[in-house]
Length: 97
Figure 1 (cartoon, rainbow, N blue to C red):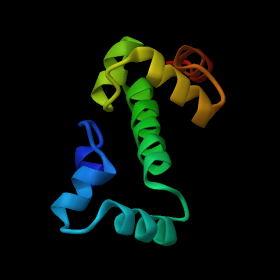
Figure 2: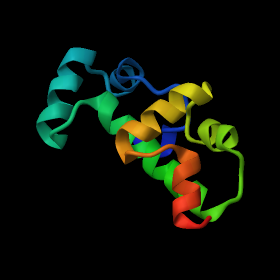
Figure 3: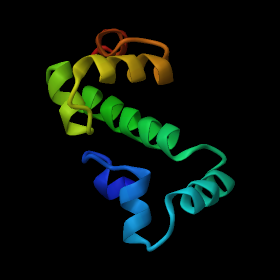
Figure 4: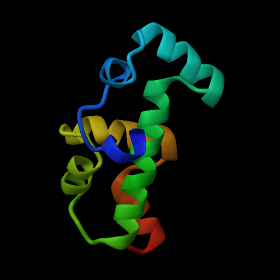
C-alpha cells in the first residue's frame, strides 16, 4: 500500500481501516516486521522516490515534493535533509543532475 499510495495523504489510520485493524495493532505489527515505525518508513520511502525524481528529471524542488506526497516544500526539505544529510538542491548539485 505504501508503494502505491505514498504520494497521497497516507496515514496509519487510513491503512488500518483498509485492512480492518486498529491503528495501534497495525503500528505494533509494522514495527515488529519492519524494525521501524510507520511514519519513519513512509518518510524514507518518499525521500527515496524524491531522490530518484531529482536524478531523472530537471524539475523544481517544490514539484518533486508534491509528486512524492509533501504539499509543504519546507516540510519536504526538512525531511530530505534528515534522511540524506543534505538539502535537495545540494543533492542535485552534488550528483550533477
